[in-house]
Image (cartoon, rainbow, N blue to C red; front, top):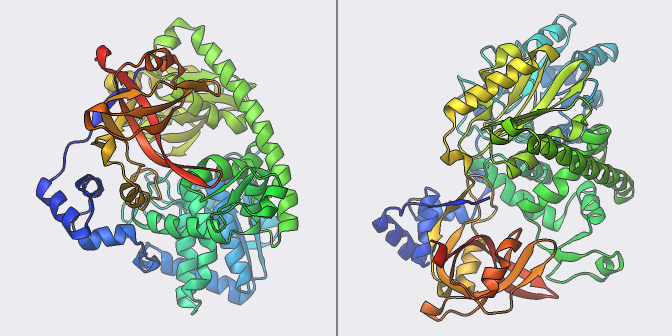
Length: 591
């Protein structure tokens, strides 16, 4: 699929020059900082050297004082607390964090609950509340869910059970009648940052409790690995507090991860960086490589395995793994969860092929501006992944639906700049439940409303999406020459990490490059090449162009090409080299 390249507009040149001079860095790097809304030396220092002291006071969250008072009252009276969270990565990390913290700090009458994806569905369930009543819980701390559970919270209150809601999703018109509603997206929110993950809100809760009970902030550091995994997996912006939390969480994961996380890395055949060497123990275990772990590893390695338990069996297993006290216990659960992940891969591959076949064989659907596909037999646990795959193949808003417990239920994914949540919200009268974000949402509806929903959703997308939005975009940060890429340039560029939404790894564009003549196809459809830029007599740089095998013949013929790419550091057998991860190629004679 052809992509459109969009080069960011140049920022304030005098400000760029001022920052370059103050920091002693290249103008190109200063321009990247200005793009990230950095205006002076102090802001640049805070960006490059995050400090935990920069985190906001948790009591700036509306209702935090009420939440702490209720938790203290419950603890003092010996009543029971249930820590309740969704079955995905954000929910299970949040439950693990809050449960482990309160357990460590003397709470005895404490347990956790993860709803079943198939019998209960997303968020707070009547079944979960009934269980809480049967077991004598008087307080439920709901994490990563509950902001729209007005009826569920009332149901619980009528049965003598209070709620503290810790959520980060958009509220509806009415807030639940809970003891406390901690959500920075509340219309009346006074909190300075509204992009925390669900686990991040859980962290603010324990931070507030620690502040009021003279528990040192240093004792909270051990939980930052869980927050970081949630930030990465829930795709929240890595700016503000999230950037600080992720910065320190990655340090922890790379130096002293909890047994559950280390066990996941082991079953995934990934060793942590240990003094720049692969340890002999790692070699004996058959670990593939040793390097510094990044947000991408949390997204593509750790997160999917934590998610797999809730997709295939029970998310409770993920919490058991993450609160495991030792490697032996964690290792056993990690192997089981890895098996779930392998099963999940088989399911999502099969269902993706079936969904693509549905689209390919339907002329109207193939040409539509939105995708809505339904099969009652598809596995509910993987339809979100399938929706993402379809969005990659047919770049447009996508809803994938299946049937479960008498309802049609599904997941939606979107494309850049299109708010799929708003589109679904416009269909709310046809839905039983829905929730989510701009680019990802979940929904359920009665079978008789499927066709009305399909028609209205398609109509809303068609009326509001532009043709340009339906073409994948490569957003280019800067045009540079290859001779600007030096070891110092790369060293400073690496300090822009952790990368993610809001602080993406910069994409550079270089014009007039050619291959050295040794390009080759690697893997299924990737091109390994070595490029140089004759106009500036640059050194050659190794590059990899994933899924661009169709361009191999033109590359091999020595055609001049413009490339856009990430600059990465590739390590093999202890030797580090600069590598260009080429996102797209345009041949100059085609422009």
